[in-house]
Image (tube, one colour):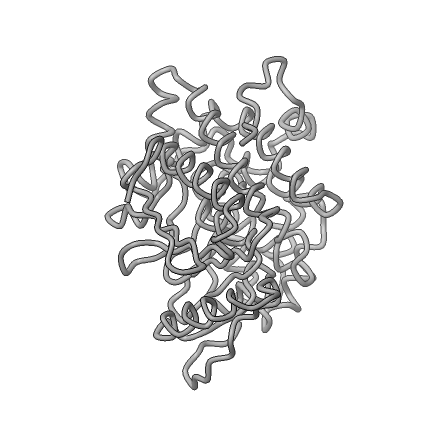
Length: 357
């Protein structure tokens, strides 16, 4: 079903009291491009004003996942073609979508099955009801590609237990559904086989007088995986409790736990520029609202869009796929404090403002 301003890569329908939005680009694990983001914005805004639609259900087409993130290969190509403003416009639209989801006036239910990464976190974790399964593989892997965890994700990671959010932000490692709940990025873990039953329960509840009181029904299951991050809280809290990224790596490297030493080597493989700025952004996010974190994301986009590490990280992981990035700086200790702080200064030409829908 399509309409003006819509795309066949975002499908929508109203089934009873539920507005169903489906990201429909399964060959790319539903990676978001600008047309998809704008389409989702228009549809969600329309449903917010439609009394007959009492709740929204968001899912991804295919069997691989909700969304693998933004189409960073296309963004890199735009920048290489001299059109950096196109990438900045995409992020402005994407962050407006994230803000809309965070403030949505109706129950917003995200089915976070399978791969949920980057922009996929942005379109789901800000919702009122976030459902993960035994198949969920969630990550904010941006330091791997020379970028930073955006889409407001640092708001959640800054509030995760202890320093677990710092660990996830700097390493970019994926977590399972139970860990997503532990981190505050999801609300309920259910079997993937329960999807139809959960959606049917939502539809029944939306006919009640107080639809916002709906809760994800408990579904009995014996084989749902538990959280794995909790068992690492000891060394994670010991090592990541610093505002200096070089000190964090040093603490990890000398810690007696072998997982900590392996993590030191992993963080050193990430873009030093990304690691240094991500840590600063994460610490600042502790005292920010979601909207303020999204504005911080928009400003940081200017510091990353033309930086060598973004171009090189996307090349190494997604274009040439040699997994051998050659970062602009070898060690995070070589990133000066002035370089970090400069990334948080709004440029003279701030670029596209977040649209008002």
